[in-house]
Image 1 (cartoon, rainbow, N blue to C red):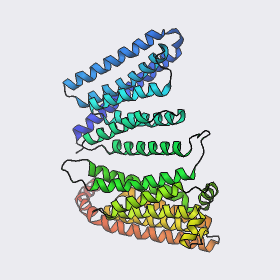
Image 2 (image 1 turned 180 degrees about the vertical axis):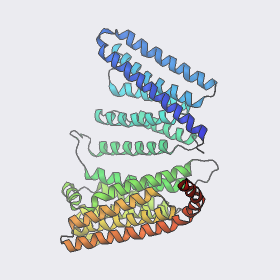
Image 3 (image 1 turned 180 degrees about the horizontal axis):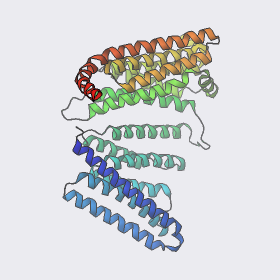
Image 4 (image 1 turned 90 degrees about the vertical axis):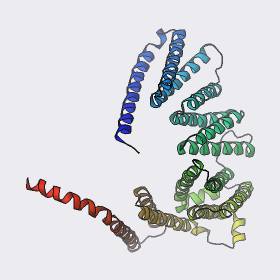
Length: 422
């Protein structure tokens, strides 16, 4: 529970970090304006000594069981270690290749994160790992160290009681690694970098296959295990990505761009449908929630529509001749997603879900008005329909909030009358 003591600790350590940041800004300004006068060995030795002092501070905090202080000491020790590593590596000629220095920094930060159990430091490791993977992709080096770091991030998430941000960061890094490796296989001579429909299809299929991971995690009922909660967080991530991917397909321009960029290759379609079939077996073959199955069905339908939209052979197989109406189907899916978020938001009284539902409803209305409805009468009816839906939602929300607000109003009414009398 977020008690007054916890709030005081949070404010204190937040102000302490801001103090350190302000001091660092002053030090950086001072060093930057006198960099040519500072000997390189002094610079490297100073940051190396600072790293040791911060590590000693973290060790001392560990002895006194001051976990928050140890996290702060360790985090800034990792930053100082990075500065020392990059400066020393360049000055002494040990390494001038940025990905190698970045990898050494990531390894040091990961060790500090495991030592202190710092979620913040492991998030920094995940962010730097994403940058390192992209640099290695550009230079054409092995991804194996990145794979090992991602496995370490999964291990860290498994050790923590609940760290969904770390687990989701590892999932995103895994998708990034698979995408970069697939791009290397499909386009070995990939310079200059170019947009690939095959890569897009594989990416969509990989994200949809995350529902299989959610199904596996939901089936784990071990006591005190964080994995079912991680599965729920991953399910929410797939919903967010699905909504973000759905919005462009409510317009004609993205469909025309995809169709123009399709090169006739069927590798992406075949791999995508294979992943969808395996995922369907795991989602529907296990005891999974109805929400997970509905989300997966939405992803599968969206993938099928993309395949129909770009490949004429799929049109013939499906006996579908209304390719021009695919954006309208996208609008229908957006409206369905808006309805699902509005209903769940009303049921749980969740402002975030209701806001997402309202936003999707407005996006669908704007797409209909700009792409399909030309006359002012039709546009007026459209927005009156949106207003009617929002009025129904508002009335239902008011009906659910009344039992909660009425007791509070009854308790505060006498005090308000006394204050008014005074």
